[in-house]
Length: 460
Image 1 (tube, rainbow, N blue to C red):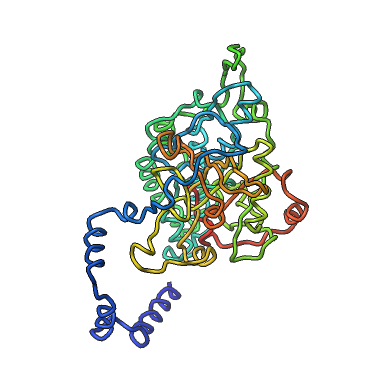
Image 2: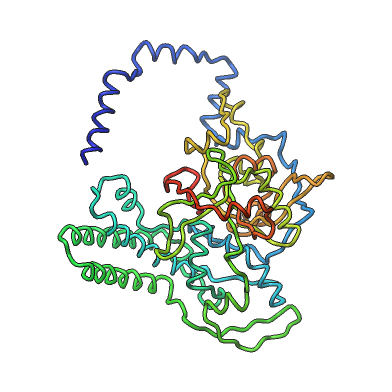
């Protein structure tokens, strides 16, 4: 608390003795810079009465991109995360849907997202309570504790969030544990859970302050998790320990009922070793060809924090092309809100011309945007296609979204190669497509990066 007060005192000193306010002289300089002519008057009328994007939309580039791709992987019908922040889960499961389609000779298949969501929220609740105990000696207004209580649980995640769940709980088909009102629209459920967790968090902090035994504190935590479990079951249903399931394949044959556990379903039907997949990032603020890990960020206490290899985007694209040529979809996350045209489902740096509309320069490099929080990963999608020029260089990419078939181009987005370079954040790929230089990086001891670093915003 003393450090916080000192920082506020320094800020007050700086403002009082060094900072320049907007006085009449400064205000006069600012106002005199704007002398509207007839065109400016027209702009004021247009901009003040219309949506900015409708005015900045660049007709010169409208519909210039087709939606054809030399290489693309089919994965069944488009999914819809609806009013939830589960894109990372939909994307991760969509990566493996083509495997199930091929293994079982199906035309369509969906995993249960409700099932994984149940375990994700329960595990995140436990992680929150464990961290409350671990930080109980810190002031409640310290950065770490304040951040902790700010969001005890949320929908967001990334690849490591998914792998922690799958390796512990497996997966089930959608019809075994279907969506509910509260998995499709998670806001109210999360609000209730946060209130309960914050309440119990204060109880645990007080128990530590009162020097209660480890056994007593653990019992109090488990009691809180019982309440969380009850709320989740009432809202989402109870996850199965075992289930029977059958399917009709493309030839019309109906399989026999087979009995599975969620883990055996992953092992027998999907049959993928999740450890074969590697996360790559292009982080221009840090040294390339090094291994990094995000500290103190995991949904499962006994799981793993996310780890990534920092690779220049040009190299990373080569691996992605090889994967798609081989029929394997990739997990892809990006800053999807930048230059996204909802009209034609494209991500193109030229979609909107804000500079000419406002007469103001907005130019920033990728590194500058990351350092200043101007850009961060906001959404995960499945990278499922690529178009190449005559020399074999990528010109555009296809993304399978999880916002329903009515969004974009029948549920897909088309991303230019230039947009990829500027607003891409994370890519997950089977390590068999990586060269030895990257594989050698995986042998390094990862360097820890603070959890609040801008590049680590979660996918929603």
